[in-house]
Length: 581
Ligand code: HC1
Ligand code: SF4
Image (cartoon, rainbow, N blue to C red; front, side, top):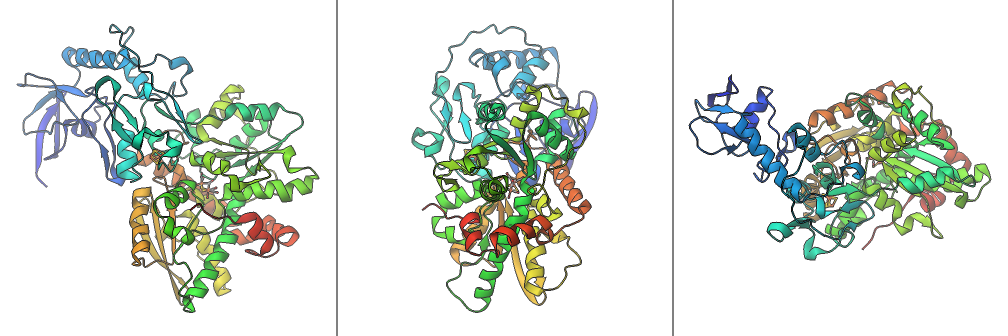
């Protein structure tokens, strides 16, 4: 590879030809601020419209300042990144951006996380000399996402994320100049667009133009209502990311502190979505074996590959973009919804109360889970199985709201029976984890043999599309895995064309799976953060005494006491669903 040498801030730098000044500076630890540029190397994703002009630098011998995100390094170049001229230019650009940006920092939910706020602070902006006209776009509220274009700075990160990475194509820039905004086709609201509510646009928005819908108040109201029994269920991926909002390193497991915080907030029972993930494996694993058996017996009608159905962003993507393949989706409800259905039937009966007396709150890394919980098929006579779904950042806000000193909390334990789980359920939170968990159980059910080595390393990693063949005692089961909807599209196109080699496919809509969900503390494209979150879940799995879903004694009890057989009539009624045309 041909390299070139240059000088940046008196440091000699050697980089491959074609490297931008911004990347060259980064390689030697020199940080140049930018609002629009974003790179996710593992996903081969780059947003580089050269729009914000915050990243300008001075180059010796050149009259004009240059945007470092666009300008490639040349041999012998001498670059300065923070001369008075550079800093004045950045301040002017920043003041112009702020001149028509709503000054709502104190009440904005991005306060403290906002990249615009941080750069304005770093640049020492203390007054805005230019007073611009304010935009007056109508705020668009979907079940999962709020779009406030009055705050948009036209960095185009969301558009690149939605169109290039996720290939959903819900967002596009409209209008020009002062009226420019990111909108949907025909300027519909998001609920009427092709949006799958994956929330990835929210996770890359540097300001608060796109944000998660806020459901904190009804949760606080329920907690304060003495007539209600309020139950929390916590998703697998929350425990590995929540600590970030309290100063912990990425990937620190805070399971016990999270449980204690929820108790202190006033939840009557703190249960675990992981329990329901074990239940999902019982149903989905059984369904896989049924379909596989029929397929291997020559049944041409059976829908193979079976596609996982626990990710609501993915389910919505299939329903909207590939409706002809919706029967390939497993009919098993997601763990969030299985939990709600069991809590409001089995557990309500155990307590001897009406389901309407229970309020089920899910804590999720995901924004699409709010939409999923609101789907009418997941309710009984208007009473939803999951009343409210809040995301990880919302839980962090609730903890602060209640003045709980998170770092000092002792480690609490989940309540039983719906809080007991195996290692298989923990890894649901990372790409490849659902299918690995399913393989652990399906293997034993199919072969009637003990699976000694439960770690299917070949299913792990952050490569966008992965595949493996698992030997079920002489029967090769072909598995495909994708994370990110753009990768999923490639696998599902093969299914549509009849060329898919797989028997089962796992898809998670978000890059990394739920660990990278749109409701998690922001990772802003740093894949190392996702790697550490995934590693933490695999650690928790390895340390669990039970690591196969069917070995969970409370799952066994649930079937023997209440449900009967996996995929039997009662299980079907409570734990399976259908998809929208
Ligand atoms: Fe997920 Fe799932 S793993 S979808 O990624 O199947 O959100 O964490 O809760 O329901 O269990 C999310 C995570 C989560 C469900 C489970
Ligand atoms: Fe696109 Fe996902 Fe954002 Fe919807 S939530 S607009 S699908 S990135």
